[in-house]
Length: 400
Image 1 (cartoon, rainbow, N blue to C red):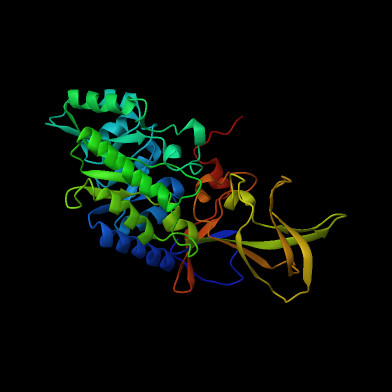
Image 2 (cartoon, rainbow, N blue to C red; image 1 turned 90 degrees about the vertical axis):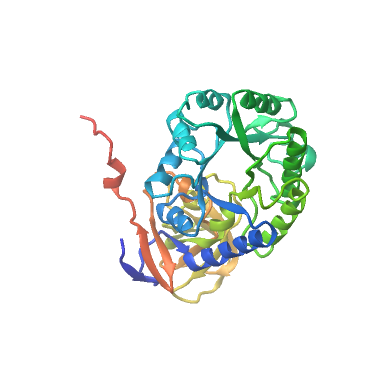
């Protein structure tokens, strides 16, 4: 696993490349923005975005908390050595065992369902006061028309502010002598615009005004852009968030929590494939590669990619080339190259900015997980060997 391989056309494809130095430079920008505007913060790396062991351990080394949303993610964080109290536990599918373990060990736990409130009753463990955060469900569409993912139907996570469910939970927890130490307000949007995060901060202030909570933290969540020059920058987001929070919260007393995923890993992973065949039909020239759409767009939602080529020879320009993957599915067509140099067998196609919601969603279809390398000082170090049939059958019983 520690073998160093030179970056060359000889490395067997397909494979992912993590660009470590670029990750670190981008992460420092996020830290600097937080230090500038609210120097009392926690960055929780979103495991769901890409939980490759090397990646989550690297963000742990950068000082991130582990932001987890399931029993498996929680246990993964503990397995790689994340310290007690440095795990953020969100989501509606926590197991009772890990929920209780997280609360006992001082993790940041945000409840998302009624059953979690009942579990708190089982914590008769000498705790004078139990402390918990609450996930808030609120109408972001009303605040930012046309920008939410769920529009008129609303989001499904947390306790609804508008219909009074959040208020009921606040009263119930207080009656149980459970201190509400934080609120979690992540909401998904189509735009990831700055006004979304301004509105989240305004909602946090509204809750503080309505309920007079003594909060240790306000968790804004994630979803914001990062690493893309043409999109809003960290300073723009953080300045707008904190300018609103400062009206109701004291930065010396209340931490600001952010939970980036795509912003800190999305732009810093590439996927390398090789052309293995070229064929002409009545309608198209098809360029067949040993990569696949399921490795970089597993949900089949993208229409364009950040692509560059490594060609063995300079060739003539071709009006249209349909770039295809290795699977036997007709829809495994990645993109159409128009008026690009002719691609030949042995040429390489590199897809950049594919670090988010790719590896974690890649299916085991026809071929298994590809290798992953980390690029450091111009060299490639392998951090995940490619899976073979041996890894595929592990922990499985073979039939008679």
